[in-house]
Length: 246
Image (tube, rainbow, N blue to C red):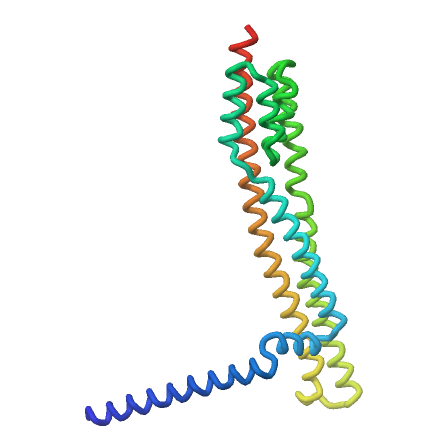
């Protein structure tokens, strides 16, 4: 019995090794003959150049807007603690111009909001608060700019794919009507176009959705920092008024 199991085990191992070797040879042949790029190119052509081109355009424009937003949001990030600490130290000395310079020389929406508030520091805390709230809304709008375009292409990509599906089904039924036969060979062409365009649209939507969620998380983090920094800035201005505006 032990010899039987040993022979069986060795046979399975040999079969597994030969299968792995065969798979590796198949992969090497695929790479040599064109690889993944060639396979994608073939599927793109098989799916129909008209609808697949529209899906590809949606992907290109969607990624372009995603890249623009990634760059903008990364540039909008700053260290609010360091910025507010520098402003507070300058105001503790009564150096309003120095505080303005710190805010002006720092990039990002938080620094811009702080600068707008400091510009009206002599007009009272109410004016400063209204200025911070108003300009915070402006900066929030700039941060959210072009996000709606990304959602548009996320919605368009699968819609274009489903439209290609409908067209493919119509092609299949037209072929059935012309041939007068409903055999799989007759229907396969239209069905293939339908399935490829659907898959292409869904893949594009998934890619753009990942980028959109990443951008949304960065946007929410920056907006939270803006709100927290605005409250801290108001406290600093109140402290300055109590110290130098008696």
